[in-house]
Length: 299
Image 1 (cartoon, rainbow, N blue to C red):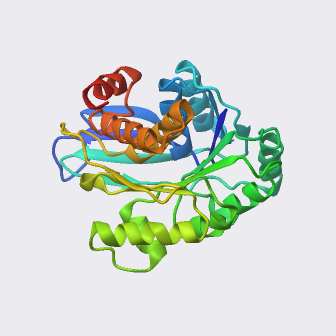
Image 2: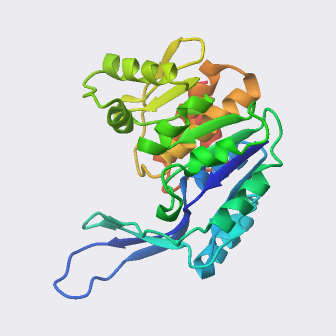
């Protein structure tokens, strides 16, 4: 079983404008989508046929909307209801590109304890995905506290975060971490000018505890330094890119699903690449049909 945790989910309000006016801007298209990295991982896992439950905090009318949208897509959720409204982010495309992310509501100690109680039911060899930003009220050590309170240290931790939160959990030997090349540069505190530099920086994180390091590099594809020390890479698949939001989350889901299905790092990397590229070729997160179609071309 896979459990995903999204501490700071969001509703994304997508607006497209064709021209910039001096006065009021008029959107020619608008769409409301759920947001949050862990939630995206849950959605792609479900589309790959992997049982999972999305955990985290939701509140207010926007939180209710997220639950409603996920339920319609048959995504299993077990969110904790908090005071305050789940944040709403505004994304504008077309004549201009602008993203405005809200900070999000406060999460109390009592809320956190409720989450820890739910996580206490996780069993040995289950997967726990810790993904995305942390509410300011919880502090950088939130993921560390979650892992420290897990009932069984053999649970496979997957982390898609950066900076201090990532550094704080390496000592727990996470099964997988997925920095992109910019996040890897930040944590290594070195300029990473080549694939060789990126590989060296990823190996350094293994010395600090990470078992598998999957680095997404945008147009340059992905590199995996696996637990055995092998280095594998996947190039970007040819296709028309429509969207980059959720590609990293799709890669995480693909890797987990691939490893669950075959216990093979090389296959897991291939499925991670397929899912990431399928989302890139889609307007939103890739559908199961889009993933299957691309897999037929690649596998």
